[in-house]
Image (tube, rainbow over all chains, first blue to last red; front, side, top):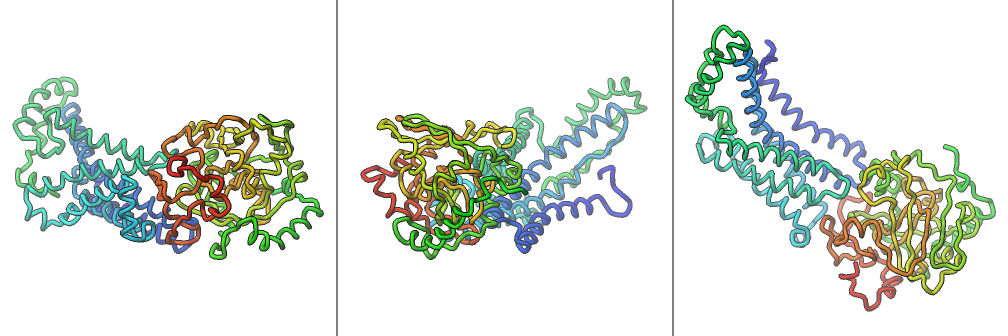
Length: 267
Length: 288
């Protein structure tokens, strides 16, 4: 649990509310702008761009959760080791990952529907576009990859699919790579947001590659107990000398029961 | 806002314009093509708040705001190169020398949107004839203003500033080629290219440079700003052609500002009857 938990509302509830507000606010804003007529003389293009932007932004947010947790856990351990103080990590974020992913998928569907319904208009025009402009085919492929992920985002699917669920959901890496490429290819000169998104996507995918290459797992819970204990023991002594902690920090961290580990990996 | 001196029209000219307006219908139905009956005039609000003007910003919705304080007086246009009488024109002088006409033109942007704009201006041919091009004048280059102190987009190296465009001399002399100094019955607002720009209705909008300060007649075809930035996407001609695809925007269809669904794009933006002969025998897929 994060350290800022207030007594009135649990941090989990607060995070859920924040994520809901984040996901719903653009749609509400566009609805209002459409009614007020402030979307400009080409409202469909404006909404198509905005929905694509939010689909990509929220997809990157889902992919940022694992690195954020990893870093926060590493930080909290480091602080505990070196200063003998326990600070909160951000593991609670994991519960929001599927919600953010679903919002992202929702905006991607709106994006595609606006393009198909108003821009292409007909399936024949869509087929011509696929042939003439590769970024449309690439974007369509990204949405297609997200579809099974959205369909299997229920608790029930996670329980039924067991370890296959994680394997299936690795498709998100391919989806985000295609989506970033789609964004960069359609970006006109001077428009930078697609490039910023592509950079973030590259960094988030790079984090996984680096974590894999260095032999550590990207997910904090999957660090096995012996390895963790060994690392802790190795660094405990100097930490004690430097910070003057009364007892090795490792003692203050209760071991994680293996049952909760497996469940939280999938949530 | 105080009116520009160029906005204060002498009554004689003003009366002429009235007359010209009355004649517009007849003239447009005749030799000078217009947008057809199916083309409703785009609301002024849309045409003046949706502008592709990279000198200010690549964001179409931001241009009108960023351009508010752009100074258009004093303004001069240098016309030189392969001409017998090169000279610098003052804006007021241009307005005095060449009778203003009203023209209703479709404008098709390369980004797949279009509008129908009532321009006011004078034929480019009248200006070019005034300086007497020599026999070596084969192309006309247009150079827009370079003023990063007021044009925020020019502070970013997006394009090789100043913006330049070019036409073949026969295109420039075509009666449809207009030097626009006004729209919707008023002077051009800064975001639409004040104080003077081109209006070439059969070409994509990027071929009509805004805020022109220099016109050069040359022998060799000049390389325009967009040809230099993306040679595979933008050719010398920039004629509206639904058969030549663009990597980002469909050229088969267009969104008429104010509508929701797209409509098919016509060859030469619907002005084929007037201009197709300029390109007789050319492979338009290669000369795009």
